[in-house]
Image 1: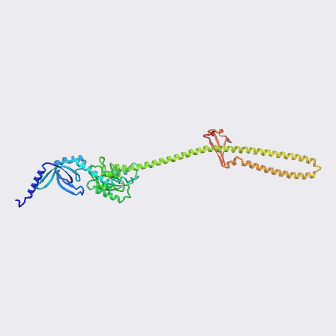
Image 2: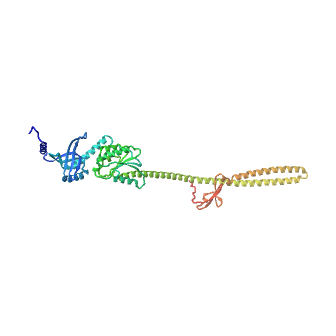
Image 3: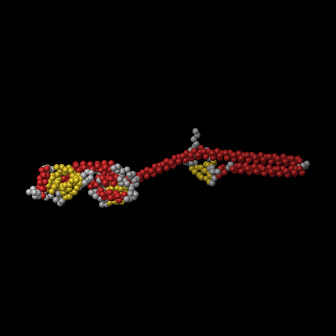
Length: 463
């Protein structure tokens, strides 16, 4: 028998016995679910693997089964406890019994699962990714990019059929302030194993038009924590962190923060909140401009008010001085006129008296000497006539000069120089005390006059 060897069935039967003896009860093992499928009977078939931590190569593999009666309990228990979908790509701590059948070979029958291990593994992987990004110096690179004051041109990464994208677009287009936004959709898969590669490809397409856009918005609607696993990916976070435009993350969940949220320039809770954030940027800029405009108007009004007060001060100070000077000059002109008139009259009377006196003397002299000096009288009369004529011409010339002086000192000529005369009831106003509120006065200029009514009298204050 030994020369011929043993049959395959015998070999498998011995292996089954060895395994049964070595693993009499269930054991707990750690593995990653590589593949997972269900059949119509509700049974779940899995492929479990273990990978080298440094090379990520598979170093062990095994088939596993969860029978339907157990799977109906384990699946909701796991998903409720972890918030993760029971799917491939996650690490699990499971209780298994080792079974070996001569026909089907080695398989693991899963009896129980520990959700806390999966939660811990997810948290560990997140920490490792964040630490790696920080060590590489890229964790905060996108946050350090200055956010545009007026973000008008927006590149959007989303599924084109997602309700979140529709909410985002409606919020932008129907904003109450009527702001105009320009946005372009770059379609991508937003969950599942292909999401990472799809979103990175969308970022690469946007990067080709970097100068066109102001920022990037990554949005998707709400979902379970498992739907958001792709946003905890190292390479996706690495690309977003180093993207040359600021990135807004609006992934549509409130409880947890993904790694993409952490590396993005701005994180908001929902796609609608992303649109509201952009609208708020416009509101803030408009409010800033309104404040500048208000400050400008206030400054101008203050300058105008100060200038008006200075003008009123100078006007109030200058007006009494002008009035005083005009009154003084007017009084001087009137006095000079009266003196000129009196002097002219006195001069005329004096010359008239002189002429009458000389005429009388001449007459008496002529009468006394008429007989003896008739011829001499005739000559003398001729000379006297000539002298009298010259004297009269001389006096007439003086009178003309006096009249011109009087004319030049006339108030009408003063008006021609730009001064004005103020009259009340046809008389020149010489003292402000002669005026009262509601009095009618006439102000004469060189080319006319105006009539006005006094609203206020401001006497000069004497110190």
